[in-house]
Amino acid sequence: MPHFFINSNQIENKKITISDKENYFHIARSLRARVGENLLLIDKKQIQYETAIESITNSEITVKINKSYPSKRFLDFELYLAQSPLRSDSQNILIEKATELGVYGIYPIKTDNCALNNEIIDKKIDKWQKIMYEASKQCERAFIPKCFERTTIEKLLQQEHFDKVYAFCERIANKTIRDSFKENPVKKGEKVLVIIGPEGGFSQREFDFFEKQKLEMLTLGNLILKAETATTVALGNVIYEYTNYKK
Image (cartoon, one colour):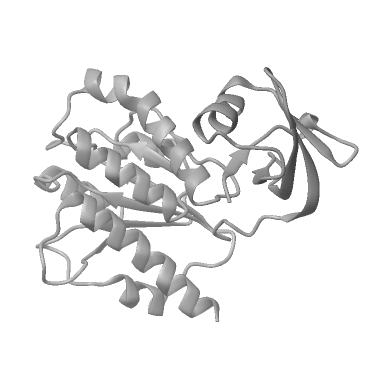
C-alpha cells in the first residue's frame, strides 16, 4: 500500500484532503491512482491512517479514513550515524540503508581521509535529505530522519550529548558490539551514536582522539568491509543486540 506523509491540519471529519503538490502529483500522476484505491498516510504525530480514495480533482485528492492507530515503525532508542561521506553512488546507497534501519539522523563528518571536500559535502546535504525522505516513505517509517550539516567528530561530541558512542575501527580494535552490550547494554530511550570512517580508515590522530575521549572502539570481525557495508552491518548489529538484551 503506498505510504505518504501528511500534515495533521489536512484531517477533518474522518476525511483527509491531499492538496500539496508533491503528494498530489505522486498519487494522481505517477501512480495514476483511482477512486476506491487504498493509501497509507501518516501525520507528524506519528498516527497512521488506512484510507480509501473518495475523489480526485485537478488539484486535490480526498480520502476516507477507514482505520487509524499509532505507528510502530520506529526504534525505541535514538540511533544516530556519524559517517565520513563516500563518493556519490556508494553514499546514496548508504543513506538509503541507514534510513531503512531506523536511524534518527545522520551526521556527515569530515575526517582526515574523507574522499570528498567540504564544498561537495555541503552541496549534497539536500540530496541526501531527499533520499532519506523517499526511503522513509518506501519502508513506512513513522517519521523522516534528518541529515545534519557537515561537522567533525570533535565538534559533534562537544555540541551533542550521547548516552553511548561506538566507533567502529577495523585493524586496531578487538572488542565486538556483543562484548560491549554484555558490559553495558543500550537501554530504551537512550541516545546512541555509531561512528563509521572513510574507505581509507581513520587516521592515527583520530584513533588517538577516540582513546583520549575513552570512546568504545569496536570491530565487526576479521573481514575488512567497504564503508557502506560496514555501516549496514554496524547499525544492524546494534539493533540486533539491543533487541536481544531488551528481552
